[in-house]
Length: 291
Image (cartoon, rainbow, N blue to C red; front, side, top):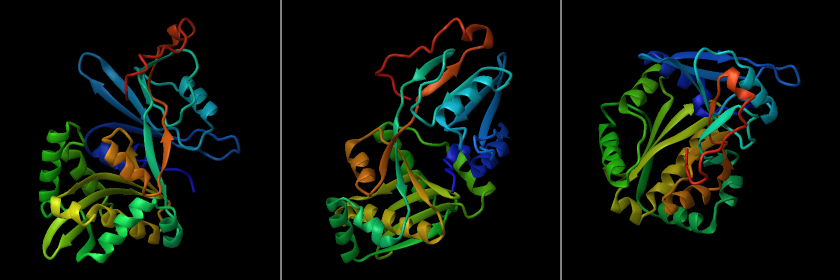
């Protein structure tokens, strides 16, 4: 089954269109004659005109074929590419940001997935399973889960990171009914941890998670993720995208010790206008810069 990263999914396209972004889904030909897929976002900026963005696409093409496709793609305005693979582009591109890594978890039968857990992660899971935690998967509701969004906003300020605007999350849920899922762990009637996932078959993507001191003391996050992994696998999902590996170290370890594999993306590139591509090789920004 082909890959389906969130920025290339129909579910994401539905949300973007509802918010007024122009979306084109192209279908380039693969080497075997079947069709690949490329979702292209276009936003028209005042006094500037259209700006195009492709994130982790096209899907289904060989990396060399992907850059050839992107080089020849006829679009009005600049094209920015968040490359989904580590192969360098041909001449005529300026790198805006260096590559990052993501964690991808293959979903299989429960026994196989449990065997692939890191020993420390498995021990924490066993601790959570012996506790009095109860876990439930729910469909996201902006009103019922307002506490989760509020907690996450506060967490973003403390840890100095940014997630989706609430409007985008709520639009995604509205345009894709049942495809935003929340896993809540409780001690008694009190929520002590929760995670939110975006579902876009055959993949799903971890979006946010919060916990409390009580939740950490009983390894509630291990149990919530494990519960969701089972839920997804039972419904035919093949891959869980756990997101970027950009720290803190404890979060990166949590993701990788769950059995996930690190994959390097290709950085962010600006395609130069046709008249300049032959004159300039691909230019890299300082290696310390991150995308």
